[in-house]
Image (cartoon, rainbow, N blue to C red):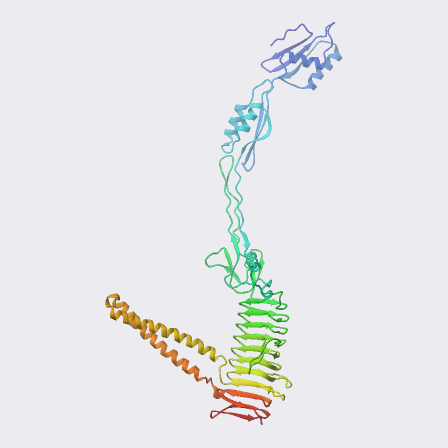
Length: 545
């Protein structure tokens, strides 16, 4: 295209090559060419859409200043648009860089064709793409975005012990609460829930920009910690950790560990009264007014004051039992007692004073027993290994088979009752058996009445019902007969009385009452060591030889 101008500056555009040439002929009366006037001339002729650079235009102007001769030079050229489509290695994004055309052709169609050629079908951001193609330029613009996989949520473990602790701390403001019942120890029983496992949530697969699946990263399915000693997943709910043994729980990573033996410094207001199914070890003392009820053993390294201990196993008190009897009034023939120990097994104490101690098996008092009630299902021994101890002074001592002591009674004449040959729990056993007998008699009576009703109303019962009712009556009648015989035998009261013995190493003092079976022998004068037992139905005391 020829550009005619009366000015010394002219332009020529070659359509084939797309180049724009400028020619300047210095002419008298016209100012020299400057960069500004050159650009203004290009604008006036609509040539600024062609690609040009100031450095090239400046070079043309300087050349004219140097030579003062007519000059022709290519100062601009046509340029088509350009683009670059980048796809990430993970096929999750596609980015477009678009260079605008300078008097040339835009690449919009080429961009769309390139997207199709790359196989990009998912997550195309159409609005962003249209905007970029409309403006003609962009730089690394994300025009397609895949769907990232949803991460999996790992298993979570929530302790349930905080809820139990909160339950323990909840107190009715209107209730009358003993301070001894407000302890801080968190204990659990077998079957108590300890921890809840929230199963993992699997991740969701993603989709790349080519429509392919992007697998979610797998996650390990973590179970309860193997270190959860004393606890296992519930048989009904594998995601619920429950206690298998009673004890004191400790939360560990992904689990709970249970110590089946509770260790405390003292049993006092800081611990509160303890009720526990396992074993309790007390490093110090059991203080006055406290209660300790356990299903296992109790081991006290210190002393037991005016407190109560009930154990399903054995009881060991290394420091002795001191039952303060202040304010406790004794009735005639009894002892004022403030300390109480009861064990399904045996009891061993260093010494005992004003204490009620009962054991289904044996009782061992290493030192002395003063003003105590001792009841044992088997044997009682007072004093062991030290000849200066082993004194039974005052109180009531009962064992089924044998009682051993160094001395019984005191020179001051304290009334002391010692009995063997009878089960000290006989009355309780008889009461339980009589209750069972009464229930069976009542059931037998109902069955007899029912049988009589069927005889008067034969249409009310089938042959099968009549047969079952008859069998039930026979069975109940037999059970009642057996129970009656057992009660009668128990009321006879003799439990191996002929073999029962009271063995004394040193002396029995006046004021002591010896009992064997149903026989009673008041001691009216001091005796040396010996053995008391039944001989032809009477109590006979055989001095040591």
